[in-house]
Length: 265
Ligand code: KIV
Ligand code: NA
Image: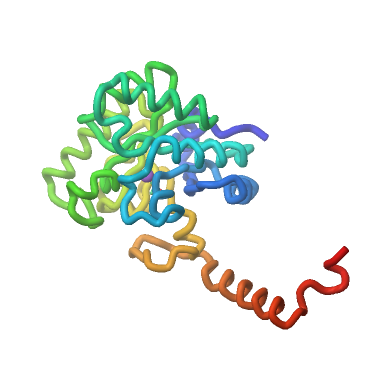
């Protein structure tokens, strides 16, 4: 099987073929998503929310991200694997950001990293890209800055913030980013930015005009219960399915119908 690469993603954009991306945090799920033909697996720091049960992604550590990233990388045969650098690892000195990126690449085996932000971190992105590490940008609602925003509402609705996002997107492309995630911004703005860039855009809550889509896998499979934003399409209610299966198991154990003759040695 031929591995999806940054140049394949760029070709897909130029041909108008949409890019499919889902998050993944563990080997078994990564294997299922990869077998189904997903183009890109994102080891998101949303692991903080859906795996670790934190309210925000702020507490995520580099060590934890590397553990998740390595697990996903071992499960993906065809998909390109991108891992988030967590909060605090790349917003300061360029040398520190570079070291965090190198650790992620060497210790996890993923193919690229993702960093939230625009012009304010552009020097750090340039250094990492120049060292040979593919970087995916992330603009709009950037959850690591949630305490600055105050809430998880739609970003760049006002012209000033929309204009800054346009500039940031261009700066990320010029810095050498191979793609950029656009999260929770007006569909019209996302489409405009997507058309203005040569690198692919991947949207989440950003409408259909982006070059690809990403969702948090636990949300689209219906494992998560509380989180139901308008942009989320739930493809299966796994919460319900798992609940049914576990109830059946409990009942079988209590009634000694599990294990049966053929299920023992
Ligand atoms: O961590 C994450 O899941 C993400 C996507 C929502 C883009 O960054
Ligand atoms: Na993230």
